[in-house]
Image 1 (cartoon, one colour):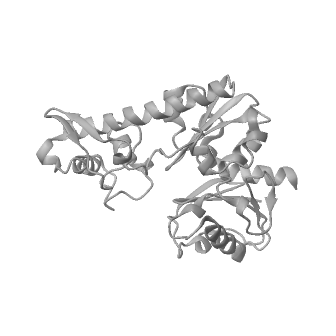
Image 2 (image 1 turned 90 degrees about the vertical axis):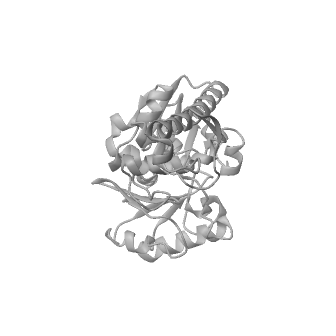
Image 3 (image 1 turned 180 degrees about the vertical axis):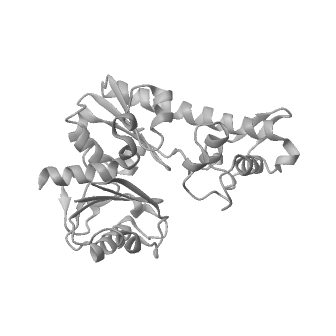
Length: 307
């Protein structure tokens, strides 16, 4: 049995050998089929998705149809997990962004009173495991309105989405709204991640070295690094992270209080970062690299449970 999670930036597969993460930014010619061909086609496959929201599709349903068709070309008997908490054989609206729910479905029996906080490259999901019935049917739209979904991730979030101005030695400076730098740049400069952990494309399609990240951060205030200096670019990184951690901490505490969840579990590629921020138990310590591909692991577990 393969567990497959198709997101907007990454395609993740979990099998008996562990987790396999493929960078696969979604567009209408995205190489989903080519990646899945790397895995034996005579196996069963359980799939969950969130990539249907990619803006190359005119609607989420069009994206669902594209993903289902691509998967079915390689795995004809694939089954797809939906936000109604069941598997489907065909493209239906319920398949949109169910990757967070399948994690709750599998983990709720093991951690019935915990709050799962999962940070990927793009988003952070905040999931009360003691409210699975209430969570079923929730869309990204509804979750954004109740702090269950934050569009702040470890790598891809634009710096300008959180900062409007920064305090530098010269005083307050407004921030350009261009996509000059992202969370990966700030996190690398601050020592949160290493260049090897910066696994998505950079805003300028150059490398993830510290020097290149500093250069992109300087560009946020329309400057060259030589113009403002390393220390000022580092200040931009720190101020981005301060805003980010404040938003995440506030939402986690709010949801934890609303749903009376005494414990916290952290997961995803940002699990270590979250653990330092909000405490709790780091699933990466317990599960290793599987934590980086939690939805793919969870949809495989859910399918094995129902087989």
